[in-house]
Length: 512
Image 1 (cartoon, helix red, strand yellow):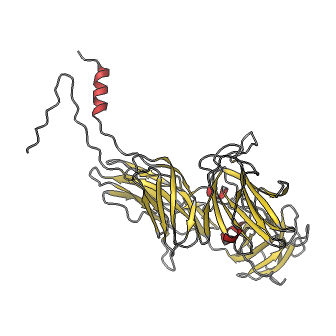
Image 2 (image 1 turned 90 degrees about the horizontal axis):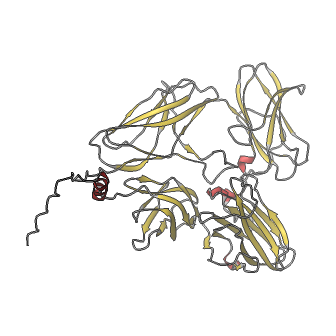
Image 3 (image 1 turned 180 degrees about the vertical axis):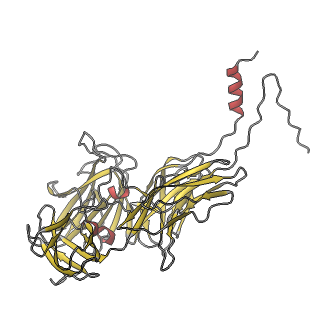
């Protein structure tokens, strides 16, 4: 009698090998210029090679190097708009989680490989090439990336780092030193998230040193410099205002709005120029009106942490709001209880003041709205089985319209059981079912929720997967993705099982 172990070994040896879902962890460089071809390195477990890349926008073409696993090129059409996009590595088995890739319109320079991590070993930058974006990696613990640049008296060096915003899992700090290594500036967190920046006016002509380090994010017990092969960053440098990518700068608000009574439907712009002194706006409204009071500041890229107070004419408080919707900016849906004059007060949480403490105040229509979020960014289904896609619908500002869920473009052989969306919102489970003979599929789809109004325009929104988890410390380059990946892998041929005591059939000799 044969040993069962021998049989199991024989059976496993007869099984064919199949591709695995790509385990893409990072792409370097993490961005490129419009109209260029970028050589990239893909890190992670991607077997077999090559794989394909999907982008959330049109205009990208990836060509893998068949002889060099992990290497390839990305062609970026000149028509692609500057800004962040998502990419995924995929094959017939499924896709990797989405990663960020940033398109710019300036020169892109990649960090040179080096062995030392000291100011003395700083890489010399060519100032004639400014403005540009420098792509680098804090590749190991204790690493410091240093750069030397010559500056003229009176010039202003504009610097902005993007690392946390790329979801690189580091908290970067940016230093500026003189030629002797004496530190002049240290910037850690920026106004919107953990990525720092500065504007430095040069007092003396000479060489200056920029150094970039990273701390662990999420925070670790140790405060030592950290890094990894996936801790990429983009350092934007310029000598003129307006040359740093606009999405990394505060929104241009223009001049402050002259102080006047606040009118529904209008937007006012203001600045808390004096510390401890709030701004007060008066408005006259009628009983039963519904208004959305919204103050934007931090979300526009300014350091202000705005607080809004709704007051009666005599100054007594009706409502105080600080943060809303997981952001530092407040809003309040106000149903007016009586005709009359009211006041809306805007202040900073820490009573700060200055030219950068800017905000935008809106008294808008209180129209109901809704959002939908998904539990995952990629799914896999098996033939003859069902798959649950869980969504959470949140109704805002009294939204009551009936909603229906749909998944346009479902592949042949996969059907959707349309769920009921609760009147008050909450969890919605979309059930997909794959027929036993369904053909293979691996691609991006949208999960949509649409209003079923009898009259008027019907709003339609894609459910999103959000990256705002417990480690979120301000916005990433993109906080959510509006498509999901669905995979129904190819059928795997059943191997011929040779039972103990039987001989494997011999193959016929090929005819000449």
